[in-house]
Length: 321
Image 1 (cartoon, rainbow, N blue to C red):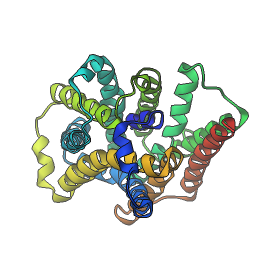
Image 2: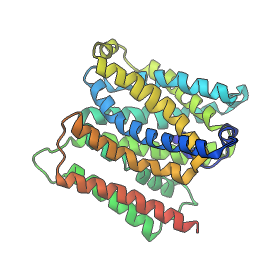
Image 3: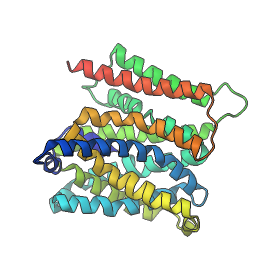
């Protein structure tokens, strides 16, 4: 996801290829399809993680997710002609991104999803833009806070608090699971800041950055993940299909590619608005497929989180008018 931030701040040659179509109308239609696909697949990720967590450990989920995503992004980058040996001079940046935007981020979400209902995990993922702004405000000098932005962050945090309900003695949801989801959001938020400060100036193709990021993550995950029992996921058809195709190939590999396509054909603003879809999708899937119960307060919470993101983005737009 961090590479997404980079793609908004540069015009990579890899993106321009998709803007040269002879007839823009079919291309725009495909971009709209990609927009919907992206929202649905990202919203589905949490049920896939939930299914897989019944068979294997969260770290193993992340390892297999990255392993099956890597060939997809690698082939795409090769097709775009985006990879260069000279890029390896920036390997230290790719290593940081592989940790913040892949290994740590995916692990925290996988662990959180294993402890929470998939619908709740998906709802909490909607707070990522809020953490991204907080990190940018803390670490970037050019990020200013306004009343509108502060209101957006406050609304989002209130939504998270309503989901957590720390005042409740019933143990409605796992506070540990919520903490992991927030840690994942913080990790990806820090990666946005790092990408903006150190990687965007390099003007590298977004597809190349994604390939290096996931590639290095695979190396670190193989080195740091215990493989005992990892084959157990393949004993459950639903779990391994969701992990391999849902999380790996589609939820990570194709998701990055589709995101670039949306940026190239609908613009960065439209691409950023896809973040509204996954929480709703995860909520619907959790209720219909997993039989999870969502009460009225949680519905209010998701509205607060999404409203907070909307107000925050409104503050950013008015700032540039």
